[in-house]
Image (cartoon, rainbow, N blue to C red; front, side):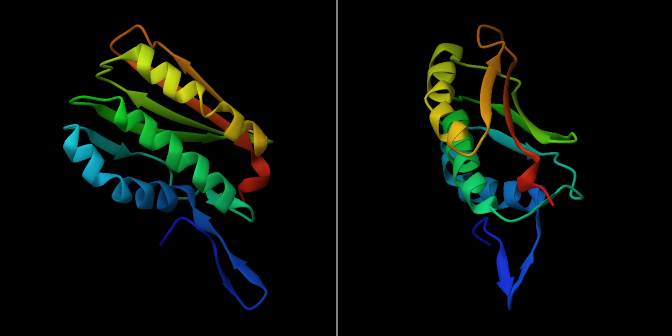
Length: 142
């Protein structure tokens, strides 16, 4: 799976956010190994993505790459919460190595997130534990 929805006839088959994250984590595994970083996907498998998830996938891929690239012996945990009109994805780096570089890299992705109606923020970039939050419209969730 490449993180996109599959179509059968005229029907879009939903993909869980967990599946999408798992696929992206698998794709970034060589980079994570190079940085001695562990990535844990804790996203609930019942959170489904609907039409337009391919746009979301590209932002998620860039965001995960940025976090891993700025890690060293990282301990990254990914969770998500569904609210009425939005989904909030949390990427927690529990062994933050270089918060300034991480903050810069994550901030540079904000225009991409904004194009799909999302927002990216970071908290704790000066602490050992940093949390990146990516909120995106609930329309991507089925």
